[in-house]
Amino acid sequence: MLISRCKLIKYPEDLPDVSVIVTFHNEAWSVLLRSVHSIINKTPKHLLREVILADDCSDMPHLGEPLEKYFVDYQKVKIVRATSREGLVRARLRGYRVATGAVLVFLDSHIECTEGWIEPMLDRISRNWTTVVTPCIDVIDDDTFGFRFQGAKDMFAGGFDWKMVFIWHSLPENEQKRRNYEDHLPYRSPTMAGGLFAISRAYFTYIGTYDDGMDIWGGENLEISFRIWMCGGTLETTPCSHVGHIFRKRSPYKWRKNVDVVRRNNIRLCEVWLDEYKQYYYDKIGIQTLPEYGNITSRIELRKKLKCKSFEWFLKNVYPEMWVPGESLAYGQIAAKTQPYCLMGDCGYGQTGKPISLVNCSSGHNKVMYLTMAKEIKRDNGCVDYSGKPGIQMESCHQRRGNQEWEYREDNTLYHVFSQKCLEISQDGQTLFMNTCLGTDYQIWLWNRNGPPGPTRNWNSLD
Ligand code: UD2
Ligand code: MN
Image (cartoon, rainbow, N blue to C red; front, side, top):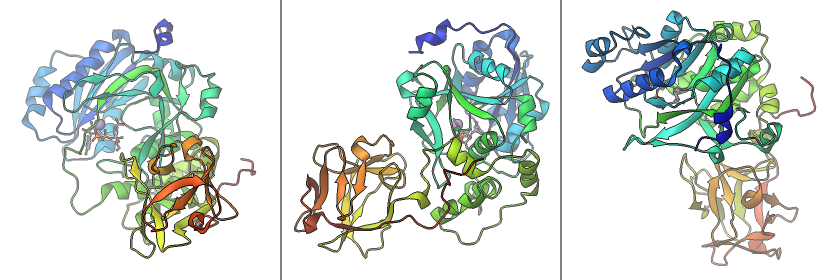
């Protein structure tokens, strides 16, 4: 259920009005109409200036004339079209150029707005024009199209990893505290998913809209998130605004041939905003020399003109929970002392719960693990987790210690703080288990006691 406190809030009558910009490329008819009708029906008339449908050169017949005809009597619905496929950034910019509302709301084309979705966002922006707001994104099931409402318990903020992939994480304790653990209050988020947000039109212009050199999909969400924070704005989510979105299992449309556009977009973003931290992305994707990524001069000038802060400032002040590889307390393969076996933890996107296994240390697998400042043993987005039940597995990192808090002790044992047990390899070298710490050779693990080369945050410097 919607947090009940949300329903009690009275918003001023004179909130700023909005231009809702929906970009689409080959969207299904019913899905697009569901999106547009929900916008019209759920936005108070006096607040809705217009709905701009920005067609990114769709070639499905229903999106041509039939769409024009369907909306012919809707004065507030405007359709703008690209004559060649431009990608979502340039399609959104096409919408922005014709928008006249005080606030812009960008939405994907497969969404559903709910009652009261707009007021909480407009309220925040009307108090401070540099606040950028996202709604809570609920899930619309991509098989049944049913709407799955998220409650207050599932509040997530946005983060990212060094593959420059957007990730969700639970609200850090500090942020909970800052808002007195009150579920209905907006919370700050280091990044946003990218598809659904409200921003003052003047502010969008002021901070340099989007990087129009970004193509098709990807990267623009982190780029605008970093830019908002580093250049003096605030990015937050209001739990009182809910919009559903169809998360699709795979991308339904065509991409460019011969170019990895996501990587190219990410390089643009790294070169402009990440300072020396960009190295972590390049290490992660394994490139030594940069492929062609276009011209970024105007974006670098923008950063100077707006006197934006450094990426280190962002990591210290906005996202202190972010894991920085160079700050690791230990890193590399974790090798058993007694046998030629190393720990292997597998945790791709969305897959968790896999048991930690043992593989030959000289095998080709990437077995590099990190001991983070939050005392996790980490690989990708997974952390070694021991729940007290038999089995040690990779789970998503939660930074709340508990099952994921480990110490690599002076005597080279791997100590699980909560259970007070040590990691042990069986005498036949086949299995792993947790045992009372005895300091026997089967509990000794060899690991480098430092982080990999790379920038680290200087927590003491002032900025
Ligand atoms: C997420 C965002 C999306 C965007 C993307 C990163 C949410 C819910 N969605 O992925 O908005 O920030 O991350 O780039 O946060 N489109 C075009 N032209 C194209 C490709 C896409 O117009 O060449 C449209 C598409 O029809 C859709 C929107 O752009 O309305 C976003 O694309 P998506 O739904 O494939 O992205 P999504 O939700 O996987
Ligand atoms: Mn989408």
